[in-house]
Length: 167
Image 1 (tube, one colour):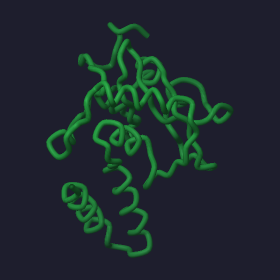
Image 2 (tube, helix red, strand yellow):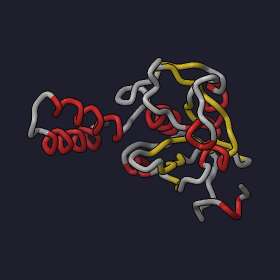
Image 3 (cartoon, one colour):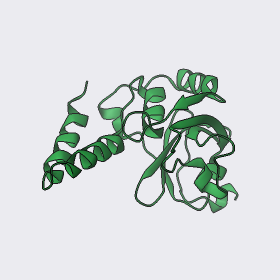
């Protein structure tokens, strides 16, 4: 898929966070330049074809791998956008530092958890030096609500408040 067929009209800069829509959740990557992103994916052998390979399903073995891929390969048929929305809360690191650190992570295996160590945590840690995941907090709150029926709206509200309270 060429750049003209992209599902976004935006032009990313090195260090930008890329949010890729996967329907009910977002997959996160860091743009490192020359059409490439670095992101957390399934380890070799656990892949499925196409863009789904660039996202983690439930990752039953709770292992992931950091990869460098062409943006369009990682995106596939999904829509994507630049999402540096936490810049108002946290000071971004320099693009050079973000890219260097991202490239040093390529090929490494890491633990994966939807709520504690997901692709959004990975990307925000690179950009801001702080691992933040709103999606992770929402999943955590939703899981907690399973044990306390009727508490989901309050749990989600608390998760949102916590996100914006963090320094």
